[in-house]
Image (cartoon, rainbow, N blue to C red):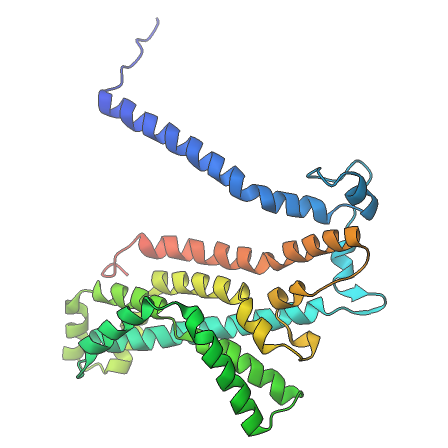
Length: 305
């Protein structure tokens, strides 16, 4: 017995058409954005000869695959290369920036939303106005203050100079108005009944902050962690200014790679691709962790949490 084909309604056909179009557009966009990464991985696996003979190929030729470029990032010519130092510098400074940014944004947003004080509205208007000013304007005065304070304190090129330089890389970057406003907007969505109930039970503001507000803000915290880590890891211009004339091992991975050379011209191209592949791993890990947490947090409301 032949079953009659089910006829779809007009709305069902429209939705199906929209899904197909969306899938095709997203698939093409995914290929477009993924192609540089695939080319980067393929080039990092090529030998010097293959890079010379077939620079246009995405993947190495048969028998020309190599992993030597990844091993040479750690030990080069019998000694530890500078790249591991750069990666460690970027890693600890980015994690420190993430921790301080999240803590600062939580406290400032909590004060703005749940505490009453004079001048709050004026301060918020000033912050909105300040967001419209390009951040590059503050680069020159910030660098002048960095140099003047360093000379006044007599900081040299030792370990004190290392931590002083990273203090100026990490601390100024934690005052992100965008992240604070992102956290503030989430706090405004928390039902006031939850806060009022906690106050009636005798809970202090610190207790409300630690046990109610912060757990509810998990999804937004993960979003800020992702944004902050990516921006810190990819930071280039400011570290370049800070580390001019300093020990090359002080560099972050992004600033260090700008002036990094080694081997032949073709070999350097493959080495650069290998380092670039390796430096994308922390970002991929952070994205994988925060994506799952954000989806779980956004799937439920504040009251259910």
